Length: 215
View 1 (cartoon, rainbow, N blue to C red):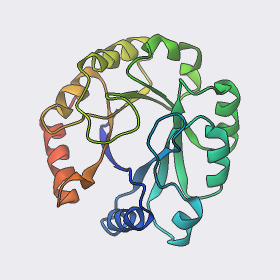
View 2 (view 1 turned 180 degrees about the vertical axis):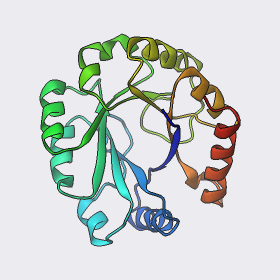
View 3 (view 1 turned 120 degrees about the horizontal axis):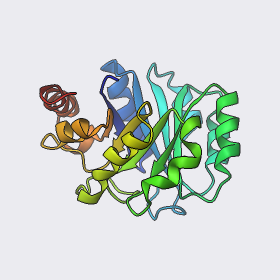
View 4 (view 1 turned 90 degrees about the horizontal axis):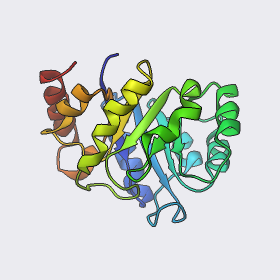
């Protein structure tokens, strides 16, 4: 299973969100993860306007990381926009089986995200229905946090539970640790490239580090 790096978008400023999306689109990045927060599931909030996203006719596809209490309502807002995959949290108070079924009927890729405090075995009832399991290396809600070391072992635990499942990792990823995360079994990495002055350079550094230690 080949490894890939996917840029993320987390801002509560609409103008900045569109600016960053346009930057990625111009660079021919195929997909972007839009972090969706509404000050309920997590304390932070973020831009997540499907109408504005569609208005700009971007080529890149949206991946929704839904850090919210009601992912179903948000997913329906984005249909039939150019979305590729939806991920919501195992900790959200929803009927996961029902929502997974709804998304599959819309031909969406689906995934469940696991926060640092949740045991990876909690995914077991849903594994056969997932395209991806997303392990969070930090507490959801804020970009730029330091990796929580105990989350790394979850990768290997999940790989033993579901050898064929795509494992994503989000939060605390650095040039210095991305190869190790891949060696543990993660193959999809969600990275915020907009913390520095040169986003594409940051993504290239991550890609180089990953290739040097890739499985």
